[in-house]
Image 1 (tube, rainbow over the protein chains, first blue to last red):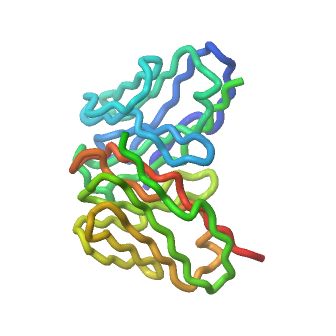
Image 2: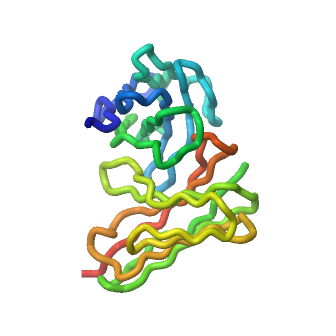
Image 3: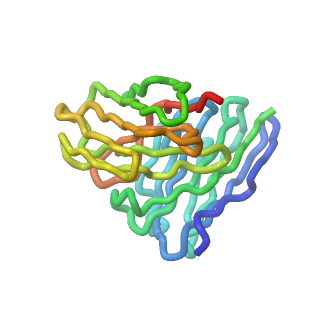
Length: 115
Length: 112
């Protein structure tokens, strides 16, 4: 069975540009969470979606937005990129919106570099 | 805001040695999680702890949920080369929720 997939693997953008990152959850999983991981730090929660509805949002500016599609895949959009947005963006999928942590799996991430 | 203090930041160990790392907070949590992240990959859950005082093992890994609910420990016995990586503690911001807050990680390096 395929795990969580994310695309693209790597991405280079310049300041002010916009970026869209994509995540396909494990088949049957209905919840997707997004995290930002700056080099040398732990992940920081950005969004959680369950059944296409936003269930939670971390302390990130409105430049960050996300959505979940009927097939449960998800996109994370970041507008007006800043140098500080350079990070590994992780997607995690889970069966449900509840905290059964051994049923949550992370993708390999998208490495975003902003120049 | 809520913060997890994870130590040590990095560890250089010989193969076969035992390893200990810990995570503390000024806040009380009802769940403590330990993850490992290898280069180029996402974190993988190692152990989940749900009860204060709980001691749980997963092979050579043992983790404990502190009695005060403000800390947790992870021990690795008889380390092997594949133990190299970054270990993170994490807690849910709210019960039954995937909104996790994470420590800064402990990087484990095996001395050649």
